[in-house]
Amino acid sequence: MPTKLQHGTLDRTKLISARRRSIKTGIIALAVLAGIVAGAVLVYTPLGDQLLTFLGFTYPKDCG
Image (cartoon, rainbow, N blue to C red):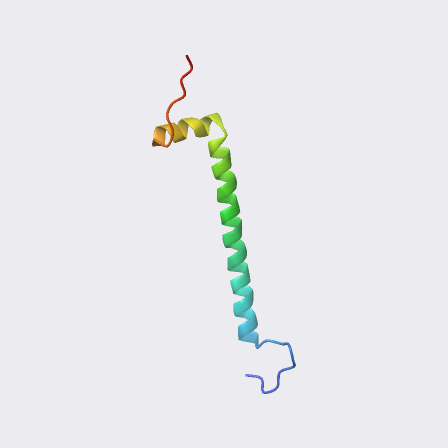
């Protein structure tokens, strides 16, 4: 442990853990964004339409 720290600096272990938290937060944000994009693609494509019908979330469209 350093005995004297300059103002505004972090201890090395605190700096490493802060960086680790930052990386985890970024990964989680990226995963959430990817899920939103994948969900939108699933809902707005014909394949997604069939899949949602198969899973029971929507009713089949009447073509006649």
